[in-house]
Length: 171
Image (cartoon, rainbow, N blue to C red):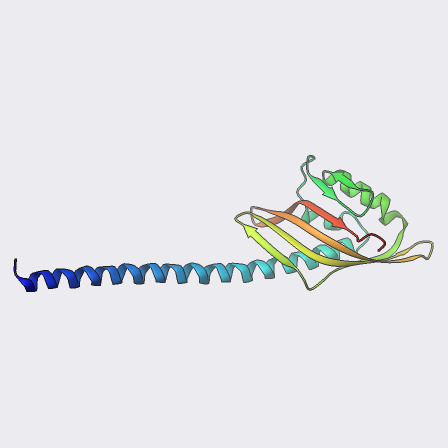
């Protein structure tokens, strides 16, 4: 074997390694860019859903937020009162009785601290909220609320399959 032939093969070997390394770096940059774009899209999607969710609950009609919820009877939803509901039907009827039957007006507002985490067709959101209520007997209530929602993508819609609302003790 002649020396130039060995040098040529060595150069070709390094050139091939360089191409592979560049392909890997390109793939990683594409993945990172796509992930950042997905995160921005998720943040916008769930900000819109959360604001619409709050507006629906603020109507004082338990039918309004129904479109945000999965309807299976085995799902559990923790609310401010009484403690928990099992399935959308129980949730709907319970909130209508516990809150809306005595409420003259109310507003649920999401804070700016929405955090979204997503894995495929499941997402969970956390956000602080504020609930204002005026009852039919004239009493007013202002409550800071912590919210966690578990969402599942079904077809083109994101539906809540579990949620937990709580208020700090004494507030």
